[in-house]
Image (cartoon, rainbow, N blue to C red; front, side):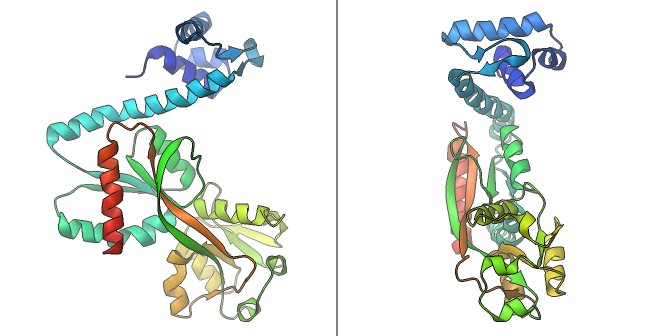
Length: 296
């Protein structure tokens, strides 16, 4: 269990308010202040500068926040890990972003269950932001991500470098010519929801060209890849997706890649887990297993 004074500190970091922290933890406000002073005396550093509504974390406070977040997440996992040892189980409990979860992992899980039919598999398919939150809460052992994440907060290994391509209907005139990204701004852009990895990658690539999704004539947000592909097929707009998610439709002529010689994007699929995890060897076992089954 995380020390209750560190928990008070983390709650204060989240709320940014002593009164709200006291309410959430069912404490008095002086008790919250006392916990912070205890930590400052214990570590012999100043964690909080300023008072009342105008306080801010010092550099030492920011560092402790990151350390305490990792401790909190790992402490949540200890009970699950102990019960795994007791029950002699080795479940595969993880999260994956949409492209990875729907297109990369199904054949891997199939091969795994053929090898070990008694194994327990739990896969949560969510966007990058939600999966990172699940890691911090100790709800999953690792996450397979296609989007950006803070490399300083997590351990990670690269699974592969993946192409990220523009797609449209074969009937769209842009399918038969080379295009500059700015020549596509009069198209309707079909996007994933905020927080998704593929949207994050596109927004960063556009930013590097001094553009944003707002520069397109019209945008539509859709959280389902099959719906996005269907809309593109019927020439209702264009989208940007990982090759892994559209290679079948492109090979069958259902979709067409948009030729853009000066807008070629690759991005890693990453295996991400908490730093200083108490079961690091088990987590890295799953990375090696996924890699061997993917190549098998």
